[in-house]
Length: 369
Length: 183
Image 1 (cartoon, rainbow over the protein chains, first blue to last red):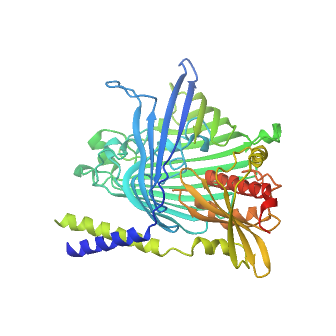
Image 2 (image 1 turned 60 degrees about the vertical axis):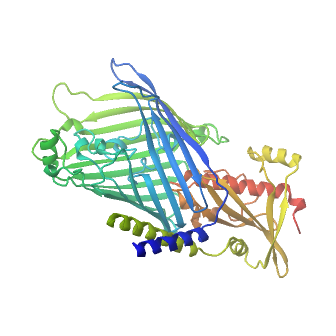
Image 3 (image 1 turned 60 degrees about the horizontal axis):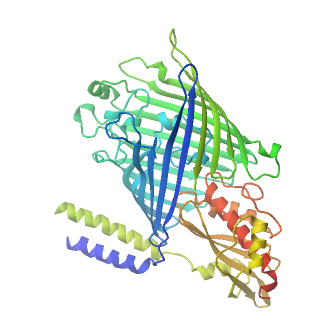
């Protein structure tokens, strides 16, 4: 006790003298997106203010800052309504920025896997809906309570490494893999501390490479399902040259003890999930109006995602071996406002009568500030 | 009791790390600014505000609103005389200020661009030399549009855009007060 206490007192004193006090600088910001989705066939389309998000950030000093993101999904929640929206704290953490190479971050943090989970503001990605891989494979917006370190130790290199609350296998399912297992900082069960990390490397202005992972048990203390260990890795690349931008993401997840999970919870959880997407976008506005500062991106994305890549004890459900082709336009009159439209062709590997490949027309507005 | 000790030890360890990290900070701001113009022996600050007519001209040229406060301009003096000017400024990235400095020669062409403090959670690539080097030699006569004359950084669009517009703001301000700059 005395040693720990002395250490604490000394550290507090050092911090107090070392960190310069500055005027507080709170900032607010936000993003939002409104969607119109119209499936092929007889089903009617619908308009939805899908996400309305407020950022609140505050710098206590040059070295200590707070960031948060509060979201209202689908405009409202109603008591007793079965299919209402949600209000969620998507991020809320403190940064202790000790040096450029090393900082400590604690609170509700984004699991740093994939591209869209970290950068999910609507003008930052093409297509009205987020890529399907960033939903079924990487459960965007994925956040958990925990702490970790981050920094930029060398030019072009950045890292993040966190220890957070883990997943809960009770929520895993056949269609969306680990998505339902997120605890999202809601009275999280801490019995499965999990590691996640990301390494970013950008050798020049136009190229950005990323590698990320998440690893941890998901048994939530239930002995009969083993450790239900989840290991997810992902790699991503972004390349921009002149008016052309390309991006690609691959993600591969394994779920241990899937047989035990299915026996206990009665689902069809696979032992392995796999997916990827590639996207190309070209700014065609200079062809129409060379003087304009705006962007009009014509893009095409191909996605393949299979949440039943390997199963044990049952035949993989091939309706969850899916591929999407998305063709669309993103108009950005200014860089942080996007008017989007696309058509998405959705296919799956199910054979036989009654199967149908579908499509959907999407129209959307997005902004951030 | 054991848990209390454990918790305190963790907090203490974190505190020591923080203190170590903060005290290990590098050179001061003044030294960095001086280093941006090789040969500079002395930096002499002057505070210069735009007149109303200059503010209007600023808006017309850039489409941005003119800086609210007076600009502090450091005249860099070598043994033989004036070798340029350095301006220290801040722009807002996604939610935090980015502190940067622009050094120009007497002809107002950029000699150096430095990021002094980057506080955002992500997108620190504006610190990369390969990106900052694009600004070298640029003058107030060039428009410096993000994604056109200065390429944006893939993965750090917001901060590269903010710094580009900030540098443009500094150059145009210097150009408008060119006649009043210390010689």
